[in-house]
Length: 151
Image (cartoon, rainbow, N blue to C red; front, side, top):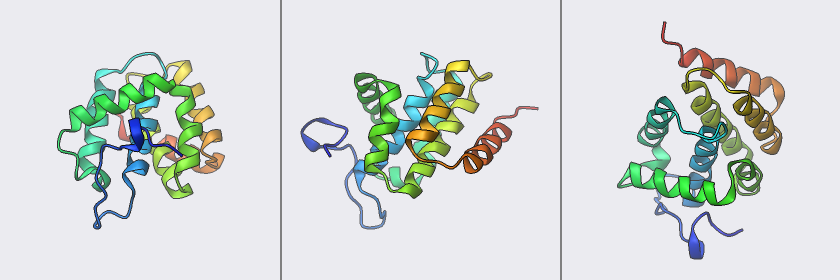
């Protein structure tokens, strides 16, 4: 399977401290970005959450410019189309990382000011593509909604 970026190149370098290939990290980020684009736009709160995902997750430790990395991943998502990203990610990611990718996508969607019907539809589609059991998806969605409460 070709990488997310031209000529098999990825944005991250393999690091022995991080037991992931850069290709896997790229696809997790692209799933999160695809979720932000499900309603056709990136809400400011979603943009902040994308950066926080990269800052807080150890698989992005080697990224020197988070903003540039997100911009390049977003370009790759827009080229493929947000709705095709889940299917492609499912071919690359082991099941545990499919669950992480789904959780990141849910976090992005619940970060906005309410959920647009297209975002709900996207999560349902993504859950099927990534083979996330319905019960687990429900728990992830509930926690994501709780984490996004502001009062």
